[in-house]
Amino acid sequence: MARRPGARILITRSQPGAAVLAQALASAGFVPLQHPVLAIRPQDPPESADIVARLDQFDVVMFLSQHAVAFGMPLIATAWPRLPSQITWIAVGDATAAALTERGVAAVVPDSQNSEGILALLDARGVLMRRALIVAGAGGRMELALGLIQRGATVERLEVYRREPISREAAVALAPLVDGIDAAVIASADGVRAFAMVWQDAGGSFDLPLLVPSARVARTAEALQFTKVIECAGAGSDAVVRAIQTTMGTNNE
Image 1 (cartoon, rainbow, N blue to C red):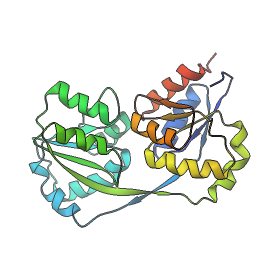
Image 2: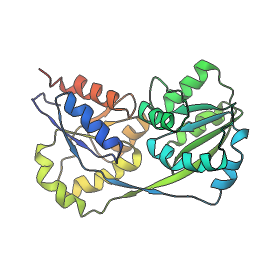
Image 3: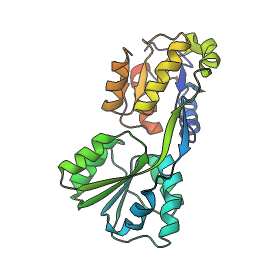
Image 4: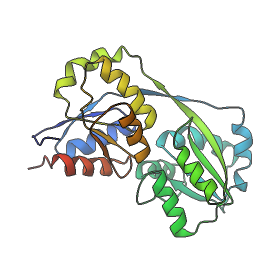
């Protein structure tokens, strides 16, 4: 990435994360542009009630996004006015932990705010993992479940929302901005797939630097022919800002 004042960074994630990241980027001297490529829709599959009713059987409960908290905690709070005391609660990142704190749940956050970081945290703390619950969106982060299973845990998923690509007509709104965008921030594998369609329709170059939260999302971006993929240490705002500053330089000069 070339250094230049006021570099324009496209944020493709949905709210509330987009606004939080935009503020962090602006504070660091960059120009954030918000253009979400996925819509978040709540879902309550038939198995949800049974999973939530058995909450006290889990040793570890992991929330993988703010959306997981927003849609998952109301289900849990309705069934469990007093939460089981034996559970270790884990949030994938600081924003997710803050959302849990607002609902009275103290969660641990891994140093590396991604699936690999969660596994490393559990290993380092020697957390008992006979039964683990992942609260997340439909699909995504299957490496975490596989890692837990390899460590001997029985894993269940409570999928409380789904991601849907926005209309491809949204590319029309993005097209006039394409030439002035210096990098884009991607939040998930579904996000990079949706962005690839919109970006292509808008006439964007696949040499655009992409900032992604994990190796899994990086592999997806590279498979879609993006040539400059930068892996951040998670999806948190601080991690994204540090990655941009490392590769582009600091704009507060």
